[in-house]
Length: 128
Image (cartoon, rainbow, N blue to C red):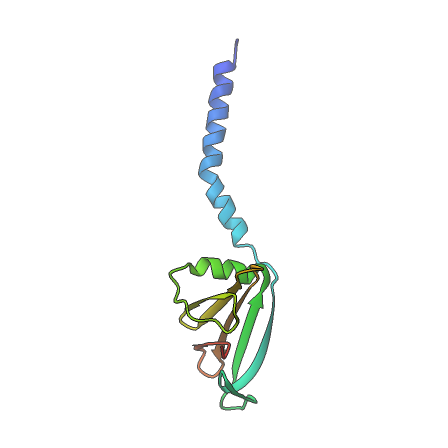
């Protein structure tokens, strides 16, 4: 049948192109900004001994939940430092000043981090 070899070659070339480009397509979609849910609070002192923020000592504690927290928890990997959790039934992962938890039963995740606004350095965003 005329053109069959040509069609096979075009199909093969197209499939090769898709295979090569697919990771790039996934990466560009992954980098798309998305909205997230969470909470924040301003404070001074240290987590656990929080006080009202002052001109000389202002930090912000941030917590995120939903799909963002679940992705962060997963991306931290099981090699992240794991410690006892504040709540029974939770798995905790910690890397430097980032702490994420996931409920074993519901799968719900939450992540905590913060910043010292006078130094710009990361601080732990939770007291637990």
